[in-house]
Length: 366
Ligand SMILES: NC(=O)C1=CN([C@@H]2O[C@H](COP(=O)(O)OP(=O)(O)OC[C@H]3O[C@@H](n4cnc5c(N)ncnc54)[C@H](O)[C@@H]3O)[C@@H](O)[C@H]2O)C=CC1
Ligand SMILES: O=C(O)CCC(=O)C(=O)O
Image (cartoon, rainbow, N blue to C red; front, side, top):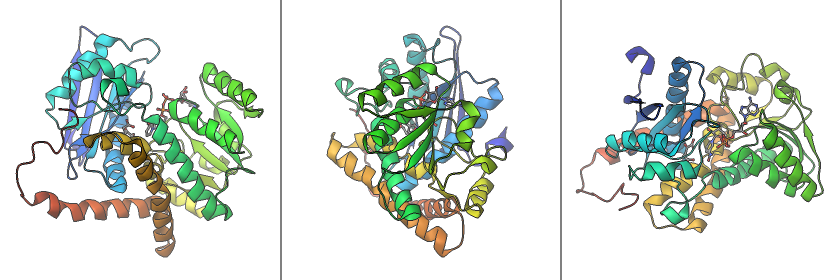
């Protein structure tokens, strides 16, 4: 196990027989601050799959925090269970108790399979819960800034590939129409984009079709694997990770990949392969950092305008990464990783300098 967790600082297995909670919390790196990352719920086939997912996701958060320049480090949690059946208040309370046991080393909120309402129950047990509804003192649904960030990412990518940041006149293949994907799809439709979409949940598809009718637009629905070979300009993965892999990469007909899904590339090599195929990859953890930007901003008094301003920076950060990749003839994911690793390294000195006791620095809610 120690070989497997490599550079991760801590992995906590949480087991509560009464509520059926089986969760894993992984803290990857706390150089920049306490770990922060959402909690995913999935009916993982094996515990091994859950471990793999939480290790990859928490590492991604370390890079995401560095890219977004926030005072948090990388962590993430996964709950092994079916979001359609197992999301009981008791289970989320038990989860909150485990989060609290980490004594401020880990902050969490929503991710795939969970909603802000679920964490209202965790909040009864822990002060380290972010992104709960405004009426509970949180910053609310973090998928809203995440989706806006994806739109900024698409603009920057369109400008680089098509020399115009306009959304209209282009076709987007969106995989996953959940909290983030639906909002992205809706905004693209509103701005003249054409859509090819897929989701394993029929209800999610029907909801988008309904919205398209309201907007006097149409959407093309494809099933499962067909999304990879869709005739589109941009692939927008908004569901699971690892979707750019040996089986899918040769199917892509798009000129760019920009989406919210965490860990879209199965390996860094797949970033090189996209590069070789002339497909511009906008690194996931930069594009999807809007939610992190919002929840990390809970350190300060609420200000949605400030969050929007910080989310807009995704556009500029992407240009910096595209330029660095170009200048050094490396893939965009390698350029992004280097950018983040240098930022973490430069902060080590700052964070090791003892100034004075700052009890409030990471107090999200007193
Ligand atoms: N919620 C947020 O603010 C953030 C989400 N992300 C990432 O974005 C992705 C989506 O997150 P959410 O929208 O919050 O999740 P969600 O659980 O609300 O939605 C996911 C959607 O993907 C669909 N889906 C699952 N497997 C699929 C497949 N094989 N093909 C097509 N559709 C499939 C589900 O049916 C669901 O509609 C995840 O990878 C998540 O980690 C990243 C940053 C922040
Ligand atoms: O969006 C959130 O609530 C936290 C950030 C996160 O987990 C993510 O960006 O994947």
